[in-house]
Every structure is written in C-alpha cells, then in structure tokens.
Length: 213
Image 1: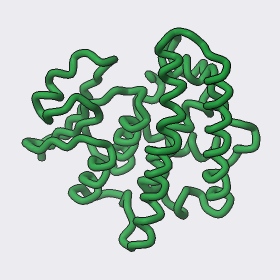
Image 2: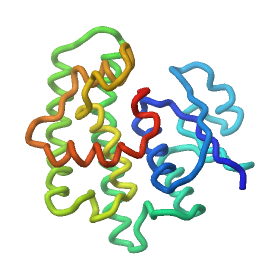
Image 3: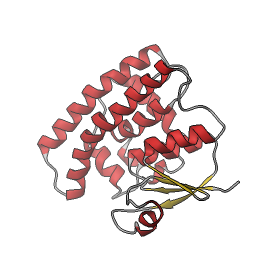
C-alpha cells in the first residue's frame, strides 16, 4: 500500500483536523509542511489550487479538509468518523458547519490581527466574546456525552476542537514567536467552559505536531 502524504499548514485548524483524523484512524503518513503563503507550487501542480490541506494517496489527490475526512472514512479501515444513519450525519454536519461558519470567521479576525503585528483591543474583545458564545453550544453537548455526538469521537469533534484549542491552550506550550503562542496569548476560554477544556485536551492528544504550532 502506498504511504499517504499530507501537505499541511500546521497552525490551521482545518489542517489540524486532518492530522487528527489520520492519527485517530491509525493511518501512517508522511508530512510536507507549508509555511506562510509561499512554496505552494507543488500543491498547485498536483491539485490546480493552492490551499492546504492536501492528501496524496498514490495517484489520487484530495483537497479540502471536509472532502479529505470523507475520503479517509470511505476508503480506510479504523474508527469511523461519520455516522451510518441520516440523522447522525446531519448532526455531524451541523457541527462541521459551525466550524466553517462560526469559529472559522471568528478566529480569522484574530489571526489577521496577529499577522498584521498590531494589536487591536476591539478585535480582541469581539473575538473572545464570539468564542465564549459559540462554545456554550459545545459545553451543553458535553453535559450529556463524552464527545459532541455521543460516547465516541467523530468528525464533529475533529472539526471543532482545533479552533477552541487556540483559546484553551497555555501560550507557553507553543514555541516562542509562533502563531499559536501569539493567538493563545490574547484568546482565552472562559472559566464556565470547564468540560470543553478537558474535551479539547482529549481530542488534541491525537495531533502529533501540536507542540510545534
């Protein structure tokens, strides 16, 4: 069997989601890291577009984290990421939608501020408020179950946890001058989300590159 190759931008939650899925399913893979917006010629040549993550599986190339998780679940053994029922799939997809249209834009505001090198108090206040509000739904789900849709990890957990990890992790756990440390220094998870904090740690334990972000 050809070894999978993951082209990844380590800090990106969408990239982290794919790394989590690969590790959770017990799949062996090589990593090609992309940093910043340069050095993406190989990705463009392979897929016709410049965005990560990209999975290369022999002569097959798959891009977009949502598509990649579905590809992995359909083609490889291991713990299932998606449900075998229509209602179960709809529930997982609602969490995926929250990651894309809720946490994604909120974190994007903070990332843009950090990358600009200029702190903006209004942006910091707004994004922390948005994260606190969004995470109420997560905390409520975890009052009933160990994971977002039940007693086992699914794609729902892998979609949401990487975003909240920026707010729940200790800045000192990321390398000095890294993007992860810069964001975690100004983005904080409120004390009322204790279940969420513990859940993030359980999910993120599958990311073998977390300490380098």
